[in-house]
Amino acid sequence: MKEKKKKREKKGWEYFDFVEGFFLIWDLFKVVVLYIPRAIGWIFRLIFKLLD
Image (cartoon, rainbow, N blue to C red; front, top):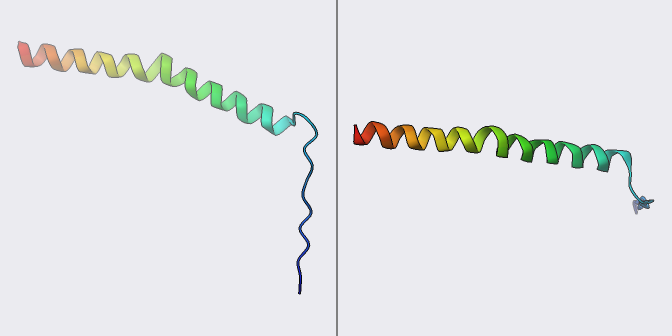
């Protein structure tokens, strides 16, 4: 038996592409605003504890 797979044609931008892109941008924003400064703070705190 041969299975026929229909290829779905993409017609420009789709709604789910937009939503996926929005969540990707949101994740990048969270990394830049929340996690990187927190990591830098932890590094400086460790350095100051070691030098104290």
